[in-house]
Image 1 (cartoon, chains in turn orange, green):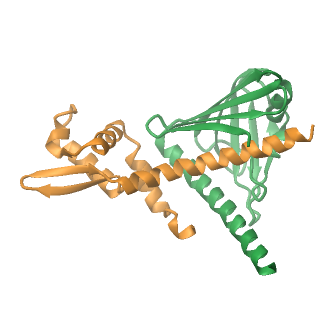
Image 2 (tube, rainbow over the protein chains, first blue to last red):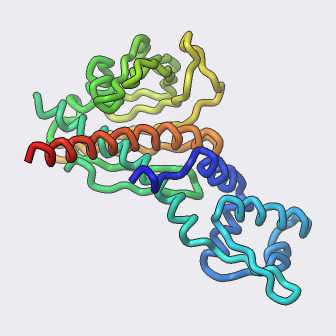
Image 3 (cartoon, chains in turn green, brown):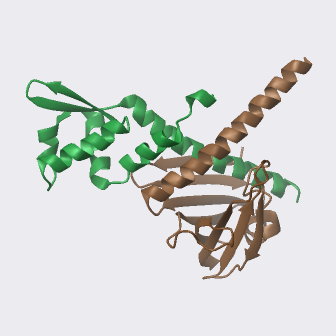
Length: 110
Length: 165
């Protein structure tokens, strides 16, 4: 179980990746279908280079994959990386579920 | 099992949990209002919380520390932003330094607690929204650590059982 956990550095990268609205939007889009970097750049009021930078941050956090195809760079959601992000929220949920159990125990005392 | 649903929203950085308890709203309110009851459930058994400041009124602050298995005492703070007994409680929470002073002015998360009467029982809804992603990251790291310790304890218990079998 413990070997399955993320290292601190991985967690840092993951949450840095989610720390920006554009990056979250990119993740949402490429999870549904693949986009080229230029296709993504056309969606936002920012330069191609800026979008490319966002994609690189997401790639380092293992949330997307980037693949060269001809002259295009194709971006896709990294299912495994997203599941790990999910797992972090699961941990938080576990904390609150345990709290709710403890509250129920206290209330049961009367 | 008191928890009936939980919703996680990665994009809104929020978490909502709904739990129902076999007790009236006034009774459930006490587990928030009374620091002696609060500290019995806020931290896990191996990470107990001790509230040494508890000014339960709008604008009031609370301070607590958790005692780790290694004997360390990381501190946290709350600031109550809205209290409407016995139905609604809102507060910010964050980390504090050794003296109890907030490390971050903004807080880490904003919690909204709603208690609703459902025929003598109580439905409690907690919505926790993180102020920023950096702060969410910090909480997750602490939460993960807590979760890992909890899991490790459970594994230990299972292993102990097996060695006796």
